Image 1: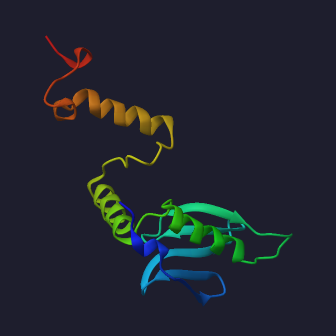
Image 2 (image 1 turned 90 degrees about the vertical axis):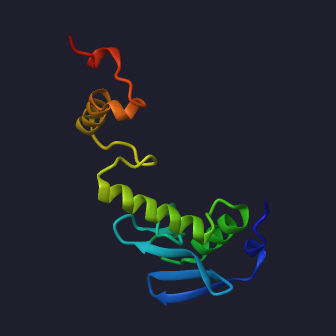
Length: 139
């Protein structure tokens, strides 16, 4: 199903020297923000999830127009989630972090994290629908 809002007028508002908001009908769809650490423009969805980075054009020229054009293309092409989807993903991410659950879209950072998660899966009967694997059965 096509979301007709994506073909509405995308308004760009400069919030400050490092931040631009892209809205459709007054609803925030994307934020383009300068990342000082990456020295690139970060294209974020309505929930603040970074989806892409756009390098500055020439040398230290911090012209945001390339990133804004890319964000608009991402909205129209459906690479950018609708605001309600982005916000639902953010809520789910925050809920999982609060509960200490691993995030399905975040790769594990270290081998220790991977071992810890795999260890919980082997010991937790709920992780496999109440069944324990052969390695964890005792006596």
